[in-house]
Structures are given as structure tokens and as C-alpha cells.
Length: 126
Image (cartoon, rainbow, N blue to C red; front, top):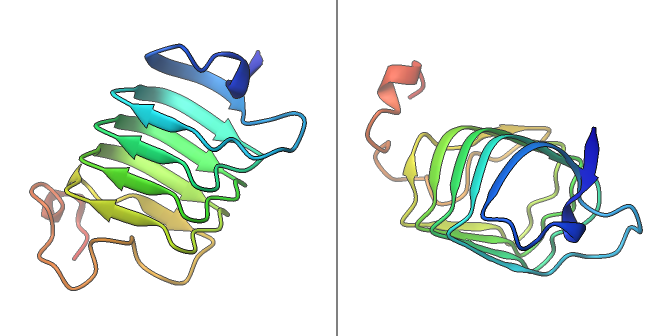
């Protein structure tokens, strides 16, 4: 069953299927200390959102307009960003394996020209 993500913003833990917004408006929201575990979020816009000290494990963001979205001190484990825009996206002080980007030409922002984070080599990526 798919839930509307903007209707459950007070949760600390997200797992399952979520549509970002059935109304199509932008969800500009400060996400702090949230866990996205086994979650699939799709549709809508997160323009201007901030993810701070969040965990993304076995999670997919798909078909989301994500311009000017920042990830700060987040932990990534098998986080996929599929067919999402990402102009102005930044990732600072994040750990784990860089997100898997599908549908974009550039590599994961914030990991460019830096040594791979711990554990990245174990995924066979260089």
C-alpha cells in the first residue's frame, strides 16, 4: 500500500512505498535524524529540502525533482536515486557508499575528486 509522504512527516522511521505528493506541489522540508530503511519514494518535488543526520538503507528515490537538495552527515547504504533531477544537490560529510545514480550523467555529488569513502571499494566501484 502506497502512503502519501507529506501526510506522515512526523515519523522518524520510513519503510514501505511512498508517493511524495499526490497534489504535485513541492515538499520543501528539513529532514533531521530520520531513517529511510527499505523505502521507495516516488513522484513530486523536494526542491530546497535538507536531509541532516539521516540514514538511507536499501532505499530508492525515483522520479523526483530534487534541485537544491542538501544531504549533510547522512549515512548511505544501497541508496539509489533514479531519474531524479539534481541541479545544485550537495552531499557534505556523508558516510557509507555513495548513492547509485541512474538517469544522470554526473557521478554522486560530493564524492567527486575525493578518495572513496570507507567500504566503497568492497562494492567493486572505483
